[in-house]
Image 1 (cartoon, rainbow, N blue to C red):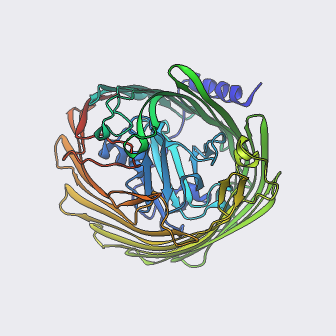
Image 2 (image 1 turned 90 degrees about the horizontal axis):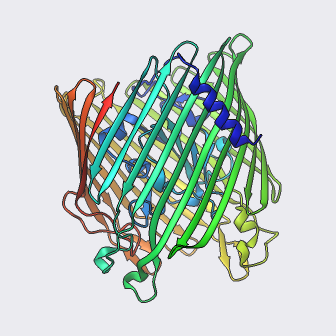
Image 3 (image 1 turned 60 degrees about the horizontal axis):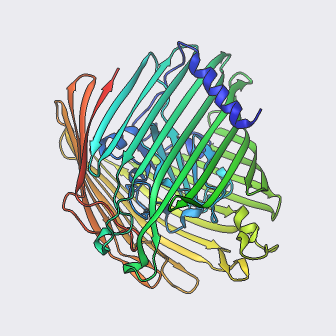
Length: 608
């Protein structure tokens, strides 16, 4: 039996058993928000490093359909997409490339092992089944191994709640876009399950900018199925399974010689099937002081491109993860996490393995001071051993102030594509992993009444041994240095109105002092949230992106205004809508590729 089949079987078992598990608390105060990506389940005031958390409530307020648009609100994060509705989409953290961002879904790495750089395409991740998104900024390889040079985007799908319930929704919008879905869930002392289906179908826009004379719309359609379930076995033991499956088709444009900005309409279509999931067993030993996790996870992707209906390119890759983690509560002041992981990656008949051992230590030196340290050793079957470390400190002298600092190292193993020479050149036996080292220092302040908050973070990141390509093949060469500052603020103007502000300045340059491609120096947003007593709530979002270098050219800066709102028709029936690009700003995220003008959607949601 394959691992994929086993995962599907485990999920099927969990969702066919009625009357299932315990509710999961979702605290919202800063000192109780648990950062799951820390692997020590530290709170936001204990972790010491910089993290942005986007909840399901945030996503509902923004009204966005894709995770990419939700992530864009985090300071220090840059998104780029070559055309809306399925265009290839990337996320950069603090100047690190998108290929240096590790993406986790329910704890499983989902970076594409069949792509040259091993990045992740965010274009197809729907928000409907997302519970929270954590963005851990800076190198995190001590926690999560390879690819975590610039940071980690950790996506957690929605968990079942107690009792029987579910949702159904439908919406229609510009570009003849239909989106809808439904979910059902149940939870009891015995266990829980949740099953959800979401579909999107759109005529889309021309991915090649229509302002350059491109008139052919590029349609997009996708189907996503999410399943999550678990059995409480007694004695604090639990068997769980998660799976997320997406099947999508998107038309796309590309390079056309002589076209304005070298991008034009093309008869290209991409079909992509992605699946990720895991089966895990958790349980306590030694009177509850040792928490154990055993997990097997998979992620697979199968891509096929067509031109004029004929196959033009295909690629498939898969990754299997075996993981054990133990978390030992020595006493109230000392916690030790340790574990082992094995990652097996396959693409085009080639395979690599990475075996890792890690240890993390948390010391609550005083009620106000939390210190964290960790070390990890990874052994790659091709390039050998890589050791990474991290340290962090968080000091909370009173409820109003948090002083934090962190230092960490990261590495990114060469991809299978790079190790093979990419089919264009001979493999380079001396190819080494990319590495990074970074620190950040921050201060968080909160007013006594909780109505005001502000945060400032200063960071510096050095990335070495960047892998480049020439006619002779892949080789290590360049270095990148990225420094900057991130600012956030929040003010509750009244009991029903609040303002959130985020801003980032990032100075990122290569060895020769050239600014990094597609990385703005300045970016930020302002969000006005309205939630008066009564059935209505709404958000006004103003988003700014500074000019970006793009080779020898520059992509102009832009400012966009979006509106979203909801109205409760009944206790369990909600009408919602969104207006995007209110003032019809003409802008690009990638040179030559278009973005939607003034557009919108309206929908209805039923909760039962």
